[in-house]
Image 1 (spheres, rainbow, N blue to C red):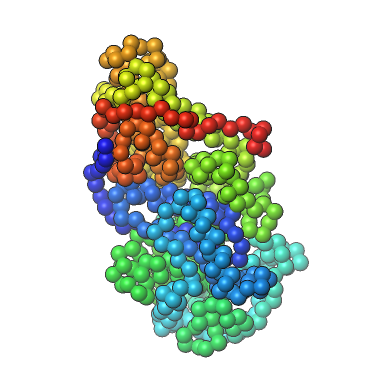
Image 2 (cartoon, rainbow, N blue to C red; image 1 turned 120 degrees about the vertical axis):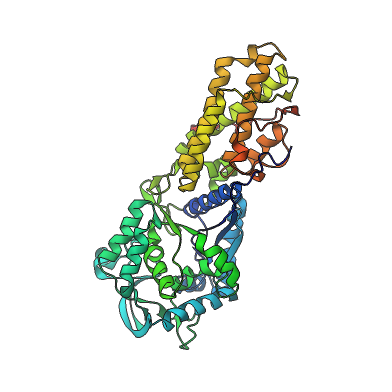
Length: 515
């Protein structure tokens, strides 16, 4: 069976982005959290029938990349190519279904950067001056002394910053405080605490910011002054507009840009929630529709980073938990917004509880009982099943939380269906019923219908195991091919399909063996 519930209630563009990641080292699970979250949200919108574009990529210019290349005996271009491919390979291994993968060394991005910042200059928001100040190479950012730790250490990297002096072009950020405040107060940044943090930055007073460098040449050239390259952050931020078509395809840009949703970590809030919308406003363009800011992923209370001892690659965990188990943990156990602790033990508990004991056990029970009591053929669900109301309520909550970009709560709501079905089986004990009786057919039809709906609703997180559930209950195609809300309505399983009992989908894990 294909195309269960393919009734479009609406089709609208939805454009979602991750940050583009620096190519000075390999990806870790902090990067994976952001990327898997954006991927799952994109998958949810595809289920809704929205025309969806999901962007990720790599940030390849700047002093940090140049120095990393020199340390490894490579040119910056060679280093960028090698490390960018590591990110692409990692996302492919995690079943991240991006639509575009942008690199800031692409010619189209140079064109877009030069065009956008020239608009800013032509509108009177860029001027030339001399800059002197503290600079962190790791952050690719300037700091004032009050923001630094003991011995002038960077508050993020905990390493001494450098003192730099050079002629720069400056952006008149200070002239845009009112426009930024109005944009933020419209609710464009979520959650509320992060929006308030951005408002606090503005209320403290905005200084004009340097947007060019002369001390390096690894960057996008400033078109109106030879010898200057754009400061890496301003080049990097423009990638979102480049991919939407700015500078190359006006029709595409006008289609996608009004619907852009950024997903970022809180460490880059200032650049995305203050500098980036200000640049767009200064260029005469619309600021982002929505910026969604999450906290840090912590190990032992310390932020995961490429340079610290807390680096963990996704491949270190997918061998034990599988790709779906890894994705599910990031989406279910890490609440979007606040900082969250990561632990191997916590992953094992979540895997065993939700995947092995709940979803996997339901699938195994259904296949076993259908094989013994229904001749291996799945019955139709009962239109009057008590589970129908549970599904309707859980779908409403699931959809609401995905819309609010809260995957953890969305999956929790979806699991209400799975838990209810397991309780339903325990209460009715179909394994004790007469084979082929109306009673056993009703109960098992209901349980299969829950598996069908749960497979659709959990497919943004579980990209391969839900396909296997779909196949085992006799359906053709994929749950990801269905369209909501129609596909989640009770009664979609047609019955009369062969149900297959296979190996456990999520074999239980032991904490002590994997600590």
